[in-house]
Length: 467
Image 1 (spheres, rainbow, N blue to C red):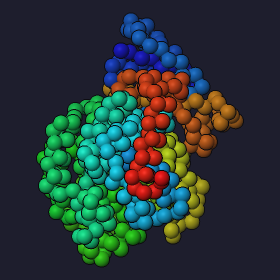
Image 2: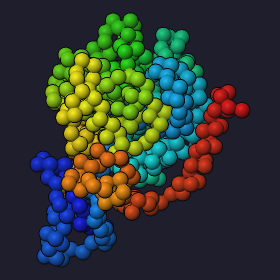
Image 3: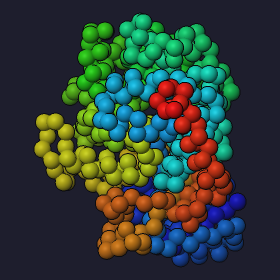
């Protein structure tokens, strides 16, 4: 199937030259991009080559750009939005509040929450999502959210998370939601063998993701790394250096700072990415750059839990690979990836401890690059993140001729960041339209919301938080 998207107000390529094409157009051919050009030039080329599009989409008044990439999420947390965040809890207290609620989840909870979260992300411009599911109560499996992603039609990087270090062993989570390390490794191998696709344009790539230094043992971290590295393009992921509490925990328990502990366990390299990295020091930023280890910046989550401001400007200046993450829907309470890019821009302008605020510290286009090329680098993908011939046909369009962007026509690309973030108008993933004229092309959203809220209320009742 060939799709022609033409007449875009601006087409943002994110290619090596960072070209932006006025009145831009793009032609897909199956899962790949066939050609990108100015609209009239692309039409002439199609006539010369006798190529006919099966579908033509007029993107007048839109910015057309690569699909946005969300590098860190916890989709199941849509079931527990506002719990803890509304009361202003910091990370460790927030987790202790929510662990008993999450312990009541079942397979339907994981499936429905993933379906809802991915739908919300799709509507915000996401075409690729990495998720971190790290607890598996009552028969839940990673399979449940993979099935949801297949229904939504989104490119998915699910990570098989784990928790094995319970309270009785000096960890943070309750023992009852931790699993044995033998079971964790056995299931990790199963999901790799059953679902992982290392090929170009893959719609599902598995990662292994022990949850954090305060919820798994060093032994499990090492064994997970060995297992992942025995399979092509299986990546490693965990939370790291998110809070000062974590820093104190690592120094007291291991005698090392969080990144030093990861280095000790063999967890640095171009196949690893860490969520957060709010508190690296100068030497550690150098380590991240030298080892090509990726970082996923989660600005809204770090703000709402008062974790701090990650030094993203300094990391980028020193060539650290940085992408963007919405993070868990209960430590953000939203699933808007374009809005997250805007938050990243604003937060870097505010600065971080020891640096003054500066409006020129982070540009709108740098924020968009975090959510496109940056995310592709962090996830180890060379087939997404830009609009060029041969790349995967993942693209989104946002209207810039609407009420929210009136008066912003001098720079419609920057307007996506400086004006209020809106919904996507078009989404094509792997050459398949998923969203057109702001409307989902499949799925009963109203029914999904109703069932999701029923499950959320049921969790609260089971946890004794609601009658």
